[in-house]
Image (tube, rainbow, N blue to C red; front, side, top):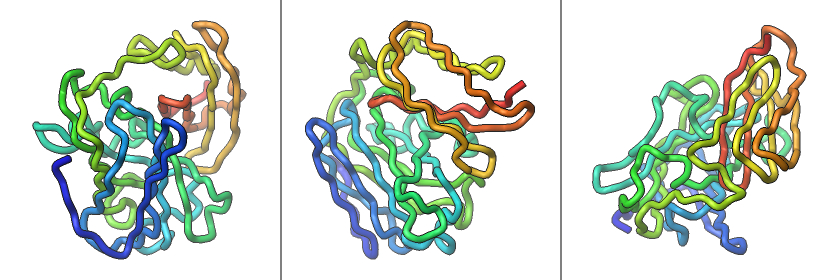
Length: 245
């Protein structure tokens, strides 16, 4: 671990749950500098990240938002934010979903479970990873109160290895959308599909189990409308921006 930051007016904690660690940033109100938390997990282990916005309007606008997006990248010898996507392409960013049930009453709390090694594939296996640089933004794309300050998760130093188990997504997996149908290749296991409209309103939640290597799910979306379709497993998360035909 190579970073140490001083911070104020925000609290965090980590709590191991069996083999999975939960890292929580709570009480965010826009104050202080880069916020860092020390984690027990390394880049190859699945973690849950929880973010609590205590002021849902002024410093980071999350009022009426059922989800927020996480812009991030791995910290290596080449620097921070390695393998980060285009900042403005929020549909390529991991999506945290609201967990407290009321997006109009502060605080708003969001959560995501993610395996960083599997998600940030632009960093080659064999690279030493020290931490994870991140910030959060809403659907309006960052800037001003549409994004947070920077955060840093100080991971246990480890060499990246995104080797997956049989039940997890592999690099050959493909998730696509065609003719109002979500198509998932080469995956067997539990799936959570959540669908939001362009305003961030939750439209539908689908819990299912894929028993074959080709899973097709009829989403039944209204035609000619934009929706965000989020697909999650215990170790993988991906969001698609779709227009039903």
